[in-house]
Length: 157
Ligand code: ADP
Image (tube, rainbow, N blue to C red; front, side):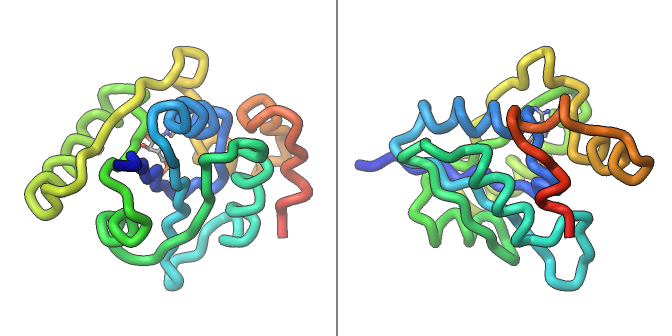
């Protein structure tokens, strides 16, 4: 059976830390679906289309990776895409507590889906979308935290 992983996130924006988890996930599964979760009622920093474009550009050339968006429950979107696994990244104990809560809920309500975690590389431990947004808001260049070779200005509305 084809093993399909579903890597959900806000990815507002996708960072080099997210990219690393996606690259490693693509080796773990036959197929990996990177999925941008959005809420039509909530404003994001980057519009959905820009978030998708940035992820596609970051992961181009990976034949078994697909980039999609979804609204609503992650488990339902994962099932729609034929996934058996939800992939998440873990940086610190703060991530652990948050992720553990979600994984426990999903174990109860979606026993057909297994959540798997990949540890962040130590050089990515302090990288987050929040930091990238803060740098941009204050006029600083966040290139060091983004997938290599990307010009973030191309994705700004
Ligand atoms: P969410 O809003 O769903 O938490 P994020 O876009 O912030 O979405 O993160 C998506 C996933 O990527 C989460 O599992 C998060 O822990 C992980 N992640 C975020 N930043 C990094 C990083 N620097 N290295 C590895 N994993 C990360």
